Length: 208
View 1 (cartoon, rainbow, N blue to C red):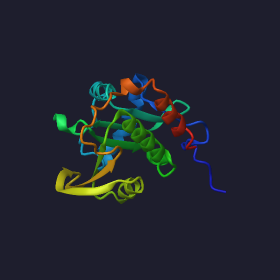
View 2: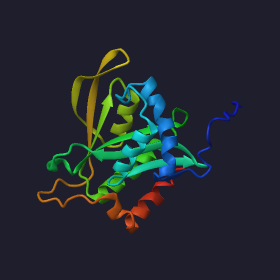
View 3: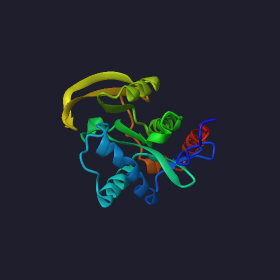
View 4: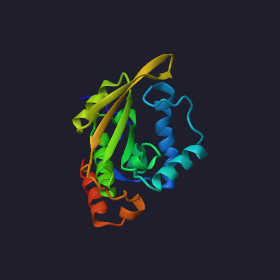
């Protein structure tokens, strides 16, 4: 029998996917740090200061879903959406990011977080979801394509980090129909009390 890793959290022990709260932000930043310092997954060079990171998260969460997965009050993953670009014609498009602590990757956490995020964005009226993947990142490419994303383009040598230039592959997922007269998307605050929102989170927490 393999030895038990005391640092590995048992996902059968009531993992919870929910909206982020202010008290989660410190943990979320700690989770994010190694992605900044050790990988090209994010193009950031320096770990943000807690105050700046907190402000950014709170500003995002005013309009878009920011979700965490926690077990026994320990955050092991998070995902968020943000406005793709600021011009009015882009309001139906969102860019998404997801980060899961390395020990808990490949255990269904990322899929559950992303599916909950997409269902909430769909409820808000978001039509397009874009994900930019800094290459190489085969695991993330496969993950996104298994969720229905399609490749739409590459920014060749789009970022420089850790001593090399890296391509950025863009993927797209359609959540709603591309109707001719779409209604403006709703903010997260406008849907948070709806029965459908509560159903989405309830379904998300059945992944374990």
